[in-house]
Image (cartoon, rainbow, N blue to C red):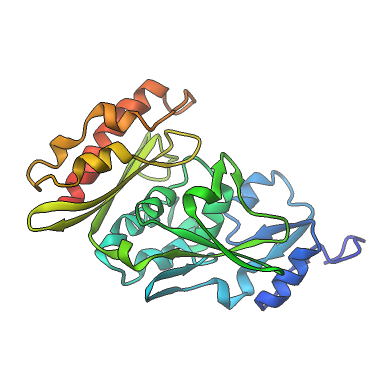
Length: 281
């Protein structure tokens, strides 16, 4: 397919080298699963489209010294992978990203690069201390996911750079986790608020806590005050350690068509308690 441009307006590279060479030329719209790109394009997808679905190095779930998930890995593959209990929240979120068709086509990398404040995958990844692996013709770099997401529809990607993988460090694969989402209905809905909690339990006490909230701020955020309150708590008293003040201190929700800011603040408190309780169960 060619519309008279100096380069083809569609390309499907088969290797990372080829993909990075094309990306370095500029002007490409990156296509992974297409579940965000196509709906956002309106009646017709125009411009130069770089389809990364043919690059094997961008797909797959590898568990070794930590966990590496290729950016083009679909949500269905993540949901079905044999992963530690610490990743349960991520797999629960994977089963709630749209319908089955979206889960089969939509990718982890596309979800992150779209940078929606309501992206279901982000809170579980924040709770897992996730890092992103970014590559370009100049080399490779890693950033904490919290530094990669700059705001609604904004990321730290530089020109000529692509998201290659998400990496979970080995220490963050300890413990167990849970994901809780609130929407206007139970499925096929954009979140009003959502929470992921990962807890490390030893000797009947919480030794480690990571809690993140999405859809209640320009980007999903960790809750440091809640995490500090949980550490040292017994399993029996952990949920009671979650206070509204500690949850809401980190949030900056807005009013929109799905909910008011006040409703989101109140909902976040209840969802954090539920996620903590489920992670402990």
